[in-house]
Amino acid sequence: MKDDPRLTRLDAFRVRIDNPQGIPTTLFASDEVPVEANAVMELLELLTLQESVEAFAEALPESFDETPYIEQVAVTPDFHKARGVPVGTVLATRGFIVPQAIGSDINCGMRLHVTGLDAETILSKREELDTTFRHLFFEGGRNIPLTGNQRRALFMEGITGLLNTVPKSQTNGTWAHFHDLSIAAELGRIDHHGSPKAERVFALDDFIGQSDTLSRDNQIGSIGGGNHFVEIQRVEKILDGATAHAWGIKPGMVTVMVHTGSVGIGHLCGNYYRDVLRSLYPSSLKHPDNGIFPLPLASPEAALFWDAFHNAANFAFANRMFLALIALRGLHQVCGESSSSLLYDAPHNYLWREKNGQILHRKGACPARGYEAMADTEFAYTGEPVLVPGSMGTSSFILAGRGNPESLNSASHGAGRALSRGDALHGHEAEFQAFLTRFRIVTPTDLRRQDVKSRRDIVEKKLDEIRQEAPYAFKGIGPIIETLHGAQIAQPVAELTPLMTIKG
Image (cartoon, rainbow, N blue to C red; front, top):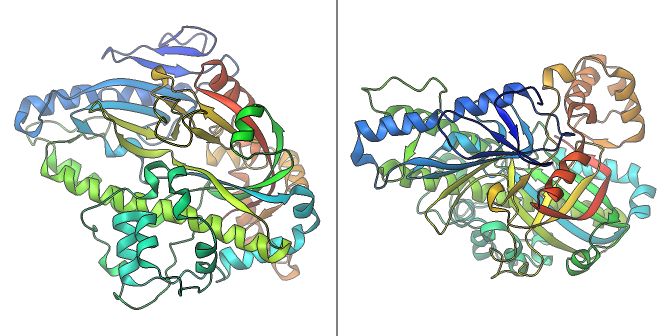
């Protein structure tokens, strides 16, 4: 990074990314945070979007109700190359939306519950929990039947839609835990209350099913692939005693962290809009070289986009909730009754319509709003909870947002990849075997079974999936947290260490 002429260090934690468009662009990274040259190139190619939207407005001025432009860009420390838009990019625009700038996994995000259990109980029952979690998550145990009316309510009103349509008498499977917990009382601990409103349901009628008939589907309560997970953790260290006390976080307590999004539903909506965006672009213009297309806010297609976006976002909010409920259900079955409460749930692939008219796109970046922005919430005196997971098998962190305007009130959503998934498959064998020895991973394939061990093809396929997400494939979480703290983006509150991780 020191020799990259595109980057100008401003202080210990901030780097300016110079670009021909003159868009204010700040990367938050200390010298200890590696910066991928290819990610910088991808970001600079993204910023040529400014030229595309200017040409669009000149060719079809009636498509815009204000002059469209990119106002500001912030880049979080877990910045790395993706497909067209780097992970860790926060984009503030006016007059237009960039659906590709949030990715296809709409409303991928984090959720965290605190429990009354202690870590020693989990460690003493890991074998039994392994079997129970595998059944609940992967062997037909999640059991979340819904009617067509309930699915429609979910897509249009999220968790609020479920609260309004699922009767107390519906206690099949996971619904019993839905009714037992304070779901309605905890909506204020979810971004958008987990319930952004949609006026219609987009292209999901076949999935919704019969109006009054209960049925089960393979999407709700699914973890998804890649780096998505459900993790049982221990509070290892308190870093800010006052905030930890306010949030009910104590040393040694057990937490449940969920990282997933809208899985197949989000990909359906995201992929559809790629074709729409191409058709809207003026035919007199050459398609952008970077493949990134703007969606004018004033166009009729924007209203349909918001509905499709909210349908997928609502599904993701509910999906994270159900995954947490399933994990809590497993803990209850094996470890006995225990208290639990939601700390926070927030997206990191999402669009926010700000009060000042700005459209804020976050891709792989979570909100980290401070006191003023959280004034009407229960986090008015602490700042917004910020959930930053480490790589599999390493520490995760809970922080409190400080509302840094230069970072567009945004923080990292994780450590960020250091190796591509392909590169992670090769080398590091001794490190990988040591990781498997010390760490418990629950997957659909039970690697403990003798008949499975004899099938090397099955075992190697599953191990390759784990290799792609192993700790050495990611940046160290320490410099990421130090940058967030040093740049006054977020204040560290607690460090969490993993006890068990459940992966699809």
